[in-house]
Length: 257
Length: 157
Image 1 (cartoon, one colour):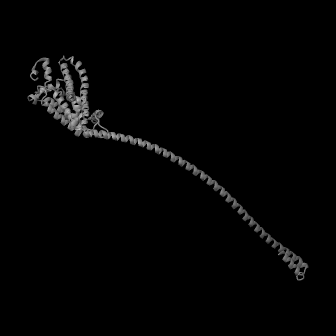
Image 2 (cartoon, helix red, strand yellow):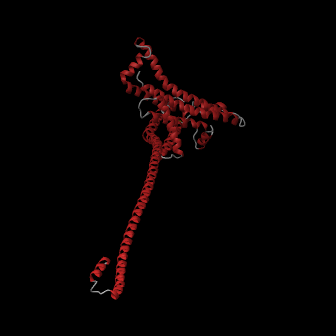
Image 3 (cartoon, rainbow over the protein chains, first blue to last red):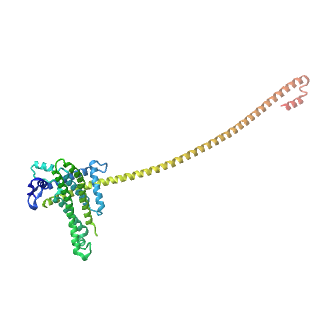
């Protein structure tokens, strides 16, 4: 896509905005912008929560602690609603996913040109600021979740139990190949749907912001304002969906049929 | 936009974030939440217990008060009774003492009366004797009527 980025006009503008800053070639190329922004946002999340965790008291909470505790309770409720086993990983995992994805998505609400403009002033040609519009970011997360699903499926049900579930459900041993196919598709669909849902929503949202940015200046606020408000809902919702589905998938992995 | 090594980098970042959250963020915050929950529950329970205890204490205090009132009225009644008894007794003793004093006085009077009678009689007899002596000295010879004189003297004495 980098070659097309030099095209002129509206197409060029759009493509320019959706091109990552990369180093390296082929598979070993790295999207520096995605890595940078997600690391910074992750650091922000960790810093903010660590600060609250260090000051956490059982007494009267401060403003920051209140906010953080609200999130913790929210995530904990979600986890307790759908996950009944005992696992120390799931709640922190869900919290991390929710906050990190939300912060990724939040980058979408910055005006589409401002960060690339700052970047270009510093000599950076391409800059894609929303990590969740990068398939690498969403897939990295969903594949990690997928690995956890497989790990816990094997750990809880045992290798043979998990294999049995793959082969003999839902239609019994007589339809073994069909069961296996169905189960494999079901399992593989999990990370793909997780990643693509987030990516698709945010990519489309970003694209619409870019399209709005192409309109004459007097039309832009009329469109981008309602879209931004609507987008606040979308970014929260997508972060929430990613988190809840992760919890649900992991609780399914823990359930023995 | 193709999948590339960014994926691996992102996975590493993700793993680090999850590890950090699990190790340093979730436990203290969650613990403080749980602790606060427990504190609040304990506080509520303590408040309820305190209220119950207060009710009990009130009841007890009422009981004690009632008992005290009963006791005090009893004491007052007893005291009144005792006072009445005392008054009656003192009246009695006063009466007896009075009677005794009267008796003593009467006895004294009687005695004095007797004494007076005695001395009077003695004086009268002496007078009579002297008068008789004077009369008789003129008429009677002392030696002659010695018998009669001593008889009379004896009768008077």
